[in-house]
Image (cartoon, rainbow, N blue to C red; front, side, top):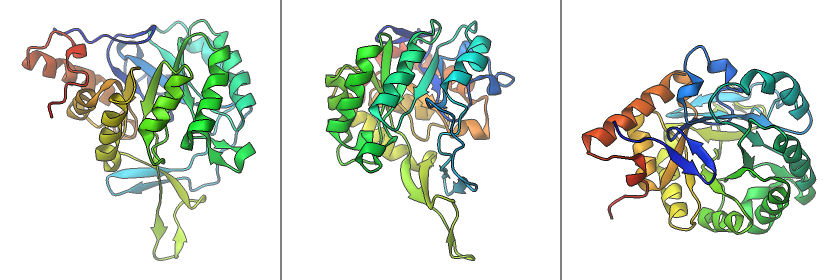
Length: 303
């Protein structure tokens, strides 16, 4: 049996398969379907400093080979997480990673300081696709300057593993990746959803209440793979890949492109047991090709 463990700086994953934020709640929601202890980690739903109601319904729509969502980071805020969620998960032996969101640099910092005090949360995923209200709603992650600013501020107050989740809605994602690496990111995860929309021809109205939303699923996989490959060759820190991973073959392709680990998202809505089958499939691939460790194939794409 091949070695499946990988490292993201100080964060040791027993295997390279994690759940993607926003697709499995805080992990408890899928515990009846998959053994959380068997996963490399659980990236929990987006958490904000204050409670958020999210966007009006409808806020999800199925599309060809994917789905659109405009949930709007609905959550009860970090204090609720600390009081009511963390006590239930802290004894489970897997890596629970908080997806951190904010509308200002100050919000990111304050939220991170709270999470930093939780002993059993070994890492955060900093979502820089959030709108920067001080710059007219432009996402932090679409310019090097704003991405650097928030990562630098969070790095000052956070001593554990800092993963920065990149937006694909940029001209050059490798440039953004280099920018956040320069300010102390330990890893980058990509890609977040692509901006898209759906229209109801009968009513001549948008399907989503917000008009546009984030596209995920198999439709985005080829673009996500390309971006992971580009970023892998642009930075020295580990890359976590995601975007349309539905099975073990998809996951292996991302690892070959340069991903140290992968996140499974939209597939969870179809089959919440799929991470377990992906772990098994990666193991079978390594054995069939006589690799002793998954680390041997990271970035080993032959060109």
